Amino acid sequence: MTNLHTTHPDVFPQFKQGNFVVWKTCNRFSGMSIDQAHEQNSALVKGEGGTIGLTENAAALRRWTVGGPEMARVIGANFIDV
Image (cartoon, rainbow, N blue to C red; front, side, top):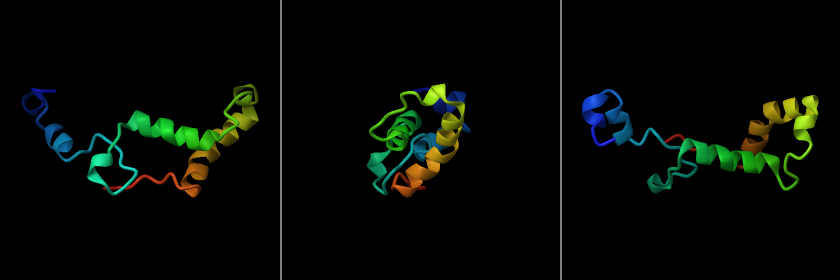
């Protein structure tokens, strides 16, 4: 990473602009890694009941996979495009 500006000069400006994290608020210091944001979003979608038994039912798994992101959006897990 210390040589990024010489090894990948096209990527370096993107890192300087903060385009390697996700912001869930407008606060520039609240950026988090994409995988952490995904885990938080998944936790919101799963709810308190978890996904026990979900993988054993193909139809239920398909509904969760397709509908989960929209459910998270509706309950307030919107990501901010900064």
